[in-house]
Length: 128
Image (tube, rainbow, N blue to C red; front, side, top):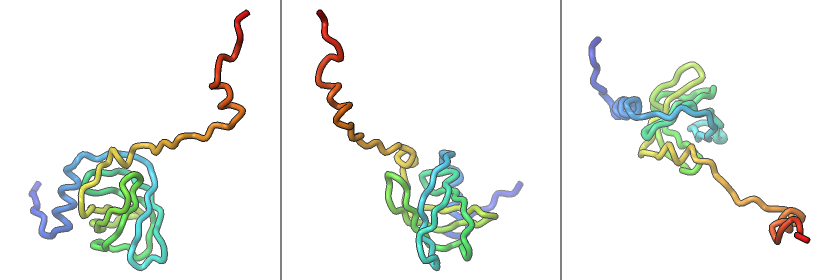
């Protein structure tokens, strides 16, 4: 099989993304696509330092389109669409991201109702 050298910046980025470790996952992200009135919610199927595989049917999405992806715990990440398939597309990020940061759950301190928090004030029983 003949090896092909990437001929454009997008192809180079895509080649680097494919060779990087990828995290398979199932989460959602928002993608701002030119020509769309609002951000589009997509399913993220895998994520690497250099890019991601997204799943969504977006009319008019073309290879080379500049996009902005909102990733949990990371924020907005600019990138370019490097390929478009049947309901799926690949995005190469303009700068590296930390896939593990995206995977981390956001834990918030829970508000404890007063009737339960009173239980923490002392023993639940008394010795005789």
